[in-house]
Amino acid sequence: RSGSVALIKSGQALSLRPDLIRNKIWAEELGKLVDAVGAFSDMDAMIIMKKQLSDLLPRIKAAKAVPGPTSRRKELSKLERMAQNDPVLSLFEFYNENRAVASASIGQVYKARIKRGAQLEAAIGKEEAARWGGKIVAIKVQRPDAEARASLDMYLIRRTALWLSKFRGGDLPAIADQFGMQLFGELDYIREANNCDRFKDFYGHWEGVEVPTAITSLTRSKVMVMEWVDGMKGPWPGEDGIEMVRIGLKCSVDQLMHTGLFHADPHRGNLLQTPESKLAFIDFGMMADVDEDDRYGLIGLVIGLQNKDLKLVTENLLSLGFLSDTTQLDLLVPRLRQALINASGGTGKASDVNFAKLQSELDEISRENVLKFSTPPFFTVIIRSLVLLEGMALSVDPNFRLVRGAYPYVLAQLLYSDRGGNVPVALQKLLVRLLTVDGEEKEIEWDRLNEFLRLAKKASSQYDPSKDDADDKVSSSRQTIELFFKFLTSRAGVFLKKPIVHELAEAIDGMASIGEANLLRMSRGLLPQLPGMGGPVNEKRLDEMRVVIDTVQSALFVDGNSPEQNQQRREAIGELLKELLLLLNDERRREEAAPLLAEVQEVFQMVAVEVLEIRGSRAVRSMLQLSPVGVNR
Figure 1 (cartoon, rainbow, N blue to C red):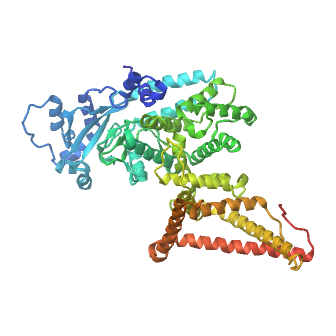
Figure 2: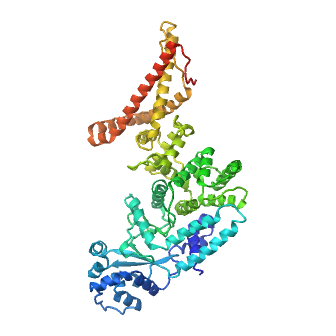
Figure 3: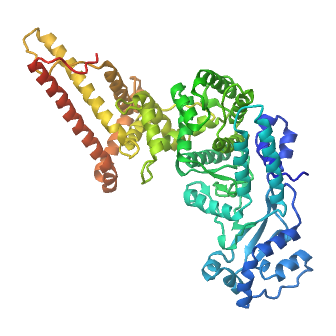
């Protein structure tokens, strides 16, 4: 009844979290705020449309393109007569007796068909008229008092934020300002139409995603016209629902990892499942452009939490602005660890985190006002979006876990982010920090790289985020090898080439030295030790190479000697031979594989050269009786 835009949006968000409300009736009532807030006068809406599109009127009159006579099959209401006789409104043929089909916090929606003819051509031009004439559209009309209500909301919210900031930590006024920017941005439908066009450019071509086109020639600051999309609001039952959530996750991860254009309001009123089982985005009012450094810093924070890498967590907490006083790190890290335990239901695993509870825990740290801890404004936009997405997922499957679901897509985006362009500097720094020891680009973190590749391959499979699924070892290893070489040949992974060459050369030299030592021992002094032989053995490097070799072996062989395992082994080898034959006989596949084969050949050549350099240097030092360099036994 208050008409508060902020309260309505809070109710919409809360309606998606029945796990927090724990009252079915309250959840159902709050759910009505998604698209049935309470319509304002349809006559007022038509008047707003006339005023907003009044710039079309001179063109229509100049072309003498006026509404034609209408049929008198039935007595028309005052509203219908107004729409049919007005030169601007008569561009549309309204459905539902000219009444709104949905209403929300900012405006309400009408369904209409754009009429073909001279009147439309005069209004928007022949090219646009040919494109849109006869199309069914959604017309969104802003509430006449929306700006006044939003202004009052923000005045009260900011005054409250200033008052609360005297008693608790966190930069509450900055968070209030961020919300205000989002709210007032949503009041500008021209901005929303531009957001829609940008979002369509990024995701309109994605498989399983549908994005309508905004008709900018008929859109003004308080009236927006866009393609109509038929579909069903969530929650969606069964496997279809899981697939919708999976598509939404992939899209959200891409927004965070690649484009930076973040959809901050993915509630069920803004998402539809189309008859073709696509996920349709139909509202683009609350969008945010998140800075590149912030996006990759947040990803580093998530990966640090997932891997319990406190050093990585600390680095990103500081760089993102959660903490300004480094002397409080010893107090903050245990408190964050406890917050993670509480938000994950006691497991302490990032993969089990409930984002709504995590948000509550972070808010509690700010309220305690012991630590100089604050939530960056950009993070509130992202966390709100994740809370809404998580609520949608939980309504489909109560066992769904957002981090577990999103993590493979995050890693896939991290490792394969070229997209034909340059790799962002912030991403390159993050990859170097994650995949080399101490971020120094000298040694590879093989265990982490192998784990990243193993999880990233799930992003292309029918991965169920509600389960801890066990992979098939053979197919998993083969895909891991394929992904590794794909990453190595990308711009994002080129930094690994130098440490790989060095580590392979060290390992080969070490294995050769072990073989030579055994041969000399077996010959009982009959064979002389030549210069360059018997070098130091880096056991760590050999252990790492054994992990790589085991992965390769598991891609080609199956353990055990049972009939079933022998059959699996034959099938695995047969599949590999089949792939090799296809590669040899298919020109297109040979061309596709050429960069990879060239890269592998170059790496082997560089390894051979470095092995010769290591052995040659050792031979020279032996002959000159100089002390060895870099011994690491």
